[in-house]
Length: 348
Image (tube, rainbow, N blue to C red; front, side, top):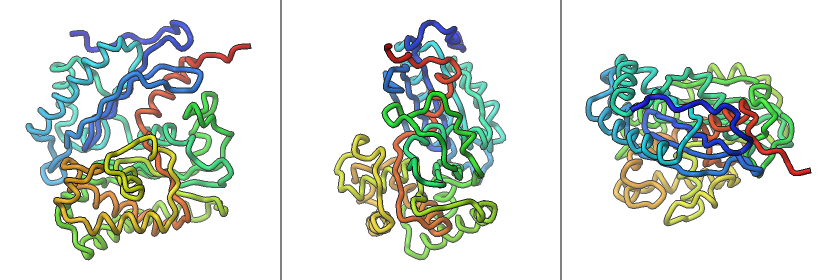
């Protein structure tokens, strides 16, 4: 099986099929799209919780069981990419593969077993890609925005300054470079999997939740000091992407089944967020398992994510939080399409 998909050689504006794969500590996600007048037109998508980084903090290695789960998910991705005749792709791996002593050998196993060649990206690249994928949801009038992505093994935080007006319908500004808006960034070596491994996730008391939050606050201290003098205004807000914030949004909306159309772009007040986190803390484990916006695969992780969110709210107080059900994969797609000048030109 050929491990490499052919590069797109400018085969006509809007005609290429692009794929972005994000293999994280907890999830394997694929998004296949083509450029359109509106921005990204999704062709296919796939997401599976694989827990690649399960017990990584204790052992330093990716386990055989986690490897097999992940290989099975990646095989599905490979078939979807082949079926959709993908012409351009970027496949990335993040914190679990960065941290594991057998990360490189795991990716070689992936190449042999599935034909997919993944690259391990550094934390700065991960932060930039997350910003690229979400920046269109930032308030255009805000002097600055804290964008964050709570992952399984790491959490990226980006301080965005004001930039050129974005194309909201496209979810991207094809001519803009998001790096021009980044004033400061950091990547914390903690996420929902690593925090749950450290503090527990099934039964989380108020005391345990407070301890998790305090731990994250301490980890944020250095970045908070660097960002202390950054300009803020009355429209300053938080912009979050991850399963944590979309779950918080789903609970806030009272959804019995997750609905991306209602969640992506949702504004929540500070009081809304406090109330939703409180409801999650009050849910026993079996209720989290049964909840349509959480489920059995994430029931023991969601409160760790809420602790990261709570710490960010404490360090960077804001009256508003905007929810993004978009992120790294969209950022990868946008960057590739910008590079290829792939967006169709408007009709004259």
